[in-house]
Image 1 (spheres, rainbow, N blue to C red):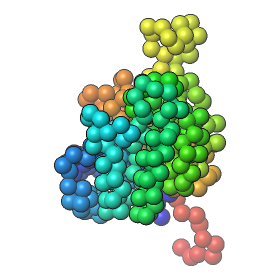
Image 2: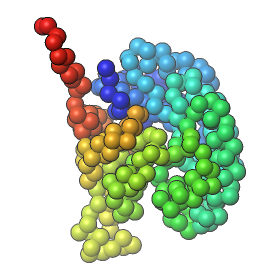
Image 3: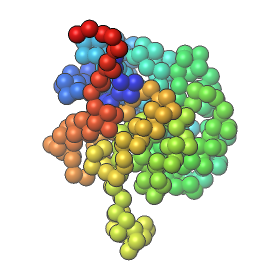
Length: 300
């Protein structure tokens, strides 16, 4: 029997077939395949075939496939993002996943409220397309440097925005790609938030944060000193045993996929050192190796 929550990592969709064979032996149980702004000329059917062959060989799952761009504008480098959402929804079953994720997008440099009507139009249609395929849509909760009033990428970084989004598109197959880090950078406590929103959490990114409260108290959050850092799990402030407990208490059966390449210390040639530490740390927080219960009356 396997754990109902798998621990994995993110890999680029266009490099997956070369990267996965190099790292899967460390014990990664799932992979989230990602694209930046566009799937481009990628033959998704062929990619799915190759990745599924690797999955069968090494016994891992594809937890989600993702595109990170602005699907609400159709402009500039995000001109293909909406079409890429549609392609990933179409091909998700071939990868063996039912989750497509990414940013919601937003109307650039306008308050979140003004993006809701366009969000409703775009993701109302995408949610219907996805439902027809048995696919769920999960929104990454990263602010990408944006605020309530201004931003270029994503409205799904604040719980008030989540309420507005899910009221605008009240579909059971849209939810969150949640991680504590993106809430902690706004000084939000992720634990009570997860308790409240866990039923809308479809996918979890394994990324943490360290908040320097001494700097916050002395210099505030608008001064020249950094007061928070993105961290690889195991090096940040979050109690991942609590996070996994909350997920399990509410029947979550999915992945926690490590989002690397952000830690200010475990970077460069220490990147995979940090990621494998996070992998083993999260497995420990999950309870370690699965151990079967004794069976009454069994003979040895």
